[in-house]
Length: 185
Figure 1: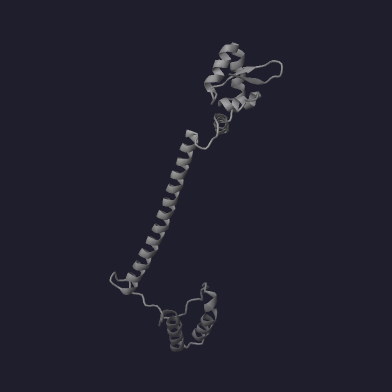
Figure 2: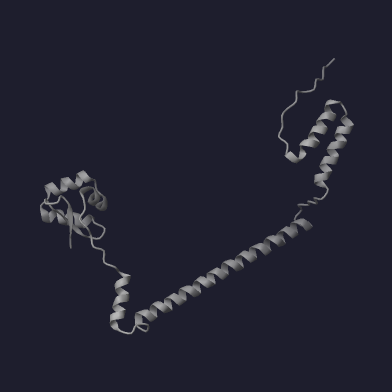
């Protein structure tokens, strides 16, 4: 004689919309109404499944409709993308024409006005004196190595040393008066 005990209940997560239906089905199960339980499950499944016609064969109507919608979406996105590219190209061409016109002097009344335009394009940056730490960062060395090089090299050699490491090829000279490094052109 084999003893068929029902396994203990297990907790499962159920979507909020199905809680009521699951409670009713659970009650039917506990009461031993297996046929009613199966009928309730069929009804519940049919509520979700009745409107869905899924045929995933490549020749099915659903798949072809999805392919058409996807192609339509892709072509729409491609049209938008090419439209933006066309506009950007037009803007770039217009800017190029304006630059050529400005360079040729068509839009300036005199050479003095032209010089003013160019002076704004490349402003001269005046370098300020720097501390040991600030100059070391600019040259890509440590503060201690900068001090060591300054102490072991002559003034000319130190200027050459800093000029080779500076991003703008500027030499730097140490001033004992203020304890700062000053740029040398």
